[in-house]
Every structure is written in structure tokens, then in C-alpha cells.
Length: 495
Ligand code: ADP
Image (cartoon, rainbow, N blue to C red):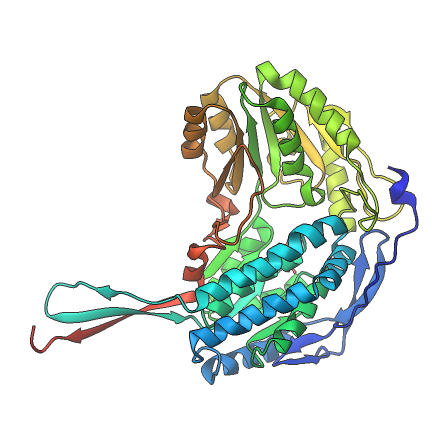
């Protein structure tokens, strides 16, 4: 664990794109302003990028509007659009090493994670959406009376998309993939912490032959660049991933401006339930992964670990041992499982929650402090004896802090698991298929993972119940977010 104190390893990659991508060109901010992008290992600047505000959003939306209204993108044959997406995915594979290095540098994620998991997923998502592009079509509808009725599935228009910092490339794919496959044009506002890989991907899209103005990327802060996008009257659809708090803000901006439809993917406090018949060693490993993956910065993190009283002591002991073995350090160092938190704000927030856990008398099994003296590294932390009313059992911590709660029976744990305003995901560990089915039906969550966790696939829909969001991303369900249905009705002369 002394690794965090070592000199940061220089990744062998250069930052080549720092301007906005508008109408197929990299351009400075209208104001000329720039802001720093920080290395989470040190808090020092990696580079400076163009800082977008309302004027840059206006320019980007105008480019997207023109590209939609005048084409060729929405009018191109669907097969040609598919080919562009395929070429892009192939270019991603070709440049995956640089993209993975850049992603790790900007986010602090272990390079082993970005190179073996996120980059392959990123390319896979675009291969998947390329496959949809030429398979989208309407229906003929049997209607009463003498009418021929058909539906046309048309792109909505200009999609405004706002993404967070925890999975910059994956979020790019979940948003941009379906929007482009359906023939829309896009203005993407990246998170202020992590603008770098999206700009690189934007460059690859130009190389793949995407017409100018179809994908525009603006870097900048939420209130000054995100809000003008959410409230722009020329934006026809808004997609947002981020905190529940900001989700409410953008939904309101969308409603007040032009009632653009909104999909939201927001926070969570997902239960991970370990039944008495579970394979405890497997459950410990998966519960550890469910919480600590990506420095604990996952909206679907298994952040309430419910363990049946009969296996609770064994589980807790093993969960603690596993957390103590977790390798924290430089994301570019071999064998490292956990890098720094994204920034000082998140780092301070996680430490505040840890203090709150200690003050509320949860048992601190291990961790509980920062690691080293610079950057945003936090010790893998485990609390046991956590009670429902403690803040650490209720709030989304978004850090490497596992909270273990004890339960007695199934009905009780279902009630407790559902007793939250969130409903993003849930994990269930049991060998009994009846128990598994009972949980799957009863849990109010957009995803239930049984004897597994964080299994993502381009075809599996993802999204939240309750205040975890509106709508589903990925899979066939995501296409509806970017399509308008038009009913065409024609009388039949000779029925
Ligand atoms: P986090 O707390 O994880 O940073 P946010 O919801 O604040 O989550 O951020 C997610 C995305 O929303 C980022 O791209 C951010 O810039 C953007 N954002 C933040 N505030 C606003 C806002 N008022 N209007 C529009 N977008 C915003």
C-alpha cells in the first residue's frame, strides 16, 4: 500500500485533442477560455481544454440542427450509417491502447481495467449499434374501418447528451451509439473532470467518415455548459447520466424550455443480498467486486451488503480480509486494483461519510482513512454492524466503503432492500432457485443480478426504478429513446 506514495508513472501517450469538436472541426471556446484537466494521482494539471459556455452550446446545436435538417445523415441509407459506426468501432480497436492510457490517466482507473474491459466494451457497443442501424422499421397496423395504417420510426432530431466522469467512454457509447444508429445528430457535453477520451473518439469518428455536425462535443462545467444544452429550444431530446440531484435540475430545464423528452440514469444504493445457503467465498469475492470496482464510483455499486445472520460472522471476517488484500496504487502499476478517487470534492465527500460511519458507531473493520499524502487515494474500508438509519446505509457514498448489514429472513430483507428512493440494481446470492426467483420478482430495481454482479452487455437493458432514473439504455429498449413514431393512415378505396 506504499505504492500510492511513489512517483506517478508517466503514461506513454500524448494529449492531442483539447478543443471543442463542432461541425467536424476542432475549435477554441468562443470566449477563448480554458480549464485544467487534473491527474487524480496528484491533483496536478494534465492539460487545459476549451471551456464551453452558452455560446459554444449554441454553435454546436446550430451545427447539429443543420446536419439533421439538411442531411445527409438522417437521410442516408441505414446501411451506410451502419458502415460509419462499424468503421469507427474498428478505429477504436486500432487505437485502443492510446485510448485506454488516456482514460486511465484522466480518471485514475487501473490500466488493467481500461485496457482489458472498458476499451473492448466501448468497441463492442458500437459494433452492436451498427448492427441495429439497418434493422429499425415500423409496423403495419390492423385498424377498424377501411384504412391502411403504418408506422414510421423516425429519428427525433438533435439529441443533447450530458455524461458523468466515472465511465467517460462507456457513457459516450451508451449515449452516442443509439442516437447515431437511429439517425439523430448529437451535442455531447462531457463531464468537466474527464473530457479527454471523448475528444479523441470524436476525432476517430471524423476519420470514420461521419459527416460534419453529426457529432459535436463541448467540454465544460454543468451550470455553464450543461444547463444551456438542457434548456436549448433547438434540442429535441435530452439524455443525462449523473446524480439524482442534477437529474431533477435538467428535467426541469427540459420541461420549461420546450418539453423535450428526457432519459435519466441517476444514483443508486443497490442491495447485495447474501442468503444463508450461498457459497460464502464466492459471495465475498463478488460483494467485494460489486462495491470496490472502479474505486467504488459506480451508480450501481452493491453498496448495502445484506448478509444472513447464520453466515454473517464468517462473511464479515472474509470481506475484511479481502479488503485488506486489495492493492491500491498507481493505476499504471501492474497488479494494482484500485487507483485514486476522481477529484478532491469526491475524495472529501467519501472521507466525510467514513467519519459519519465511525461516529454513528458502525464497526470499522478496516481502512477508514486516506492513503499517502497526495492525490485522492482512499484505503479500502469495511463497516460491519451497519444499521438502516445510519447515513452510510442511506446515502450514495460513491467510494471504496463497504457497509455490511445483518438480516434474519427473506421477507424482512426484501422490505429493507426496497426501503430506499433508489432502484437501480440488486445482487442476490443463493443456491435455491425458488429463493432467487422470489427476490428477482420482489426487488424494485432495473437490474437483478443473481449469483453474479456488474455483468454488462450491449444487449442488456440498464436503468432505474424510482429516483434512479427514467428509461432504459442499451439493448433494443434504448432505441425508443431516439425514435419518433409516426402513424400514417390512408383510406382504402376498394376494401
Ligand atoms: P457528479 O456529482 O457525479 O459530478 P453531476 O450530476 O453533478 O454528478 O454531473 C454529471 C454531469 O452533469 C456532468 O457532465 C456535469 O457537468 C453535469 N451537470 C452538473 N450540473 C449541471 C446543471 N446544473 N445542468 C446541466 N448539467 C449539469
